[in-house]
Amino acid sequence: MHLPLIDFRAYKVGNNIKEQMQVPEGAPKAEYEYRWKFKQDGEEVVIKNQGTYPQVEGEFVGVETKLIKEGAKPAIPDFLLEKNGENVTDEVLNAEKLLLIVAYNLYNTEIEGYPAIQLLVEEAREKGYRVIGLTSSGPEIQEQIKDKHNLNFEFYQADETLIKTIVRSNPGILTLENGTITQKVHWFDSEKIRL
Image (cartoon, rainbow, N blue to C red; front, side):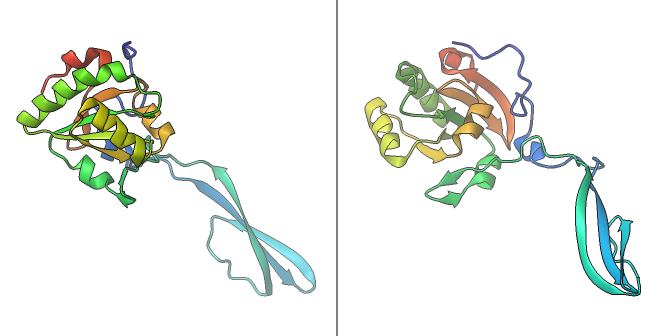
């Protein structure tokens, strides 16, 4: 009924999602070995280097590339939000004040959390927050949940695994400011959100 005390994920409070989607400046890059094959005087010659086409006499046969060392990867490689099939990731991450209701699967969401969420949504709107839901579930169940619980916000869609990585509660609540996660709670702790 609560989130863990310590969050080790890239979506922890204080992290900026846009920054976590980038490889840090100066981070190690991937290293490759190129094996260039040429035919010289009837024999195959192999020249190894880091990728520059060698200046060699002879007929080019082919090149093989081998990863020698992995490069750094962004902490968040797959953050993509959609609404009606359109990518709205930047629009959401650039919102000055955002209340994000996260329900990775609306078919098994904990419906007892929605009355408290609706109260929070109303307060957020009064204080100038943009409010959206995030789910992997389709439009039909989205409308059913909205109607059943009088929810007055739109759901955006994302991959279920991505959403579970953000927050495991179903539903969970986050606040963001220009892409930075400022608060994150299980729906049971909705009264802890300060707007």
